[in-house]
Image (cartoon, rainbow, N blue to C red; front, side, top):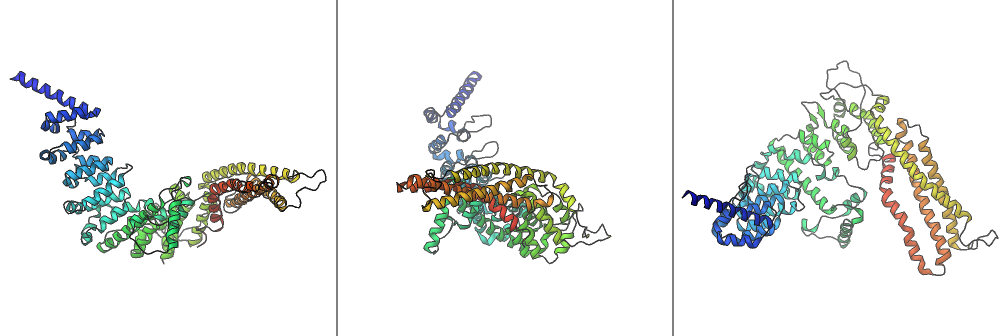
Length: 598
């Protein structure tokens, strides 16, 4: 008998090994024959060291076409048992499919056993939470599908029971539209749910700058498209709009898809921001009613530059500006991370500004100490389009020192101690590295740009003597009576004058003494004048060249005029695309700074 048992055990071992190998090789004919010969053993056998059975092994091996065939192959009497099987971590087949982001396979599994939607694994995660926690390309599609089917009556009780955990998973993943739908789902219970916010959903939202418009870093073209694009029609109900508004929205939505601009899906991003704001406002209203503390959320919002969060909280909870335990205020945070709009908002909405600005934190530091030091790197980076970092820091220094009232107080232990003025020398010491980097950038840019301006000046100067058409040794150009020749002469002269101006402006950057105050106006103005002059010299040179081509060739063949005009626009358009956003930012930061003009 023992020999027979041993032989049976050996046969069963080799049979399982053969089945597992066929699964790994994707040989369906062999698997199908073995299931036909041993229908019970094929689905119950533990095929690997983790104890995974046939269906789970197929999912782990990424044999998705086999998964669909196996689900269809399982008999009705074994279907529920096979799909409910778990691995060592308590994951069902639906957990694994959701974790990897396989939507079609998940639909097959849910269709066969819908109860799997409410089965948690050993970490208490539902399939929808695993779908939201991972980052496959179709994570949103998978999460959205599981959310919709989970709302149905059979499984909705588990969704309501795990509301805080599911909400946290959706917010962490940035799926704010789904989180908002979950919040609105069964609204009569929201008061009970909000009391379970021990998972810090509000703090999680305040730590996500990408979830809100004010802190989302968009380039020039993205900001332009964001302002005029509309929310995708699949997200909003049909409303009456004028024909002009409809076509304008369509135009900007199409522009958002142009590959050359290298921008993300702006309309979808705009929808995400609107859902995030609506969700946060709804949560804050209930948190205010239930006494949920908002100080940490407020300071996190100020740290990340999220104006929507700061405005929402301060309108209903003004005392959140101060952290009583550590004497931190949102002013400290806004200055540390250089969020000018947050700082401006706080200053305009509080009547106790002097007290808050002079307050010291637990490290005996005030806002003046923070503005004296180099701004937190994250804060400088989130300032929209900062080009001249030293200029930005100087503007902060001047504005904060202007707002703070300087008085002397003998009580040093007082957390609201009046502060002495901080000299500019100390500011210079803390910003020495930043000044050196700005100097290196300016000289490098001036070197490259002056080379281009010198080439334009050389060509323009030579063209003034080698006029198109020649002069037959009379000294008078043959085309002197032509209108296009006059345009050529004017354009060539302007190109020469602008290019020389550009060269001189860039050369003055080399001869600057680079004092701290020079970074505020002198150096930026020289860069701006140089770039603008270079731009106009380029336009004038292209115009002069185009006029030459027209006088020599296109006068006899008018059809050449169109390609001449088209090709002449290419360098100008490229300059606008590549340089205009930075140039506009330089002009705005120098003459219309949001720090100094309020």
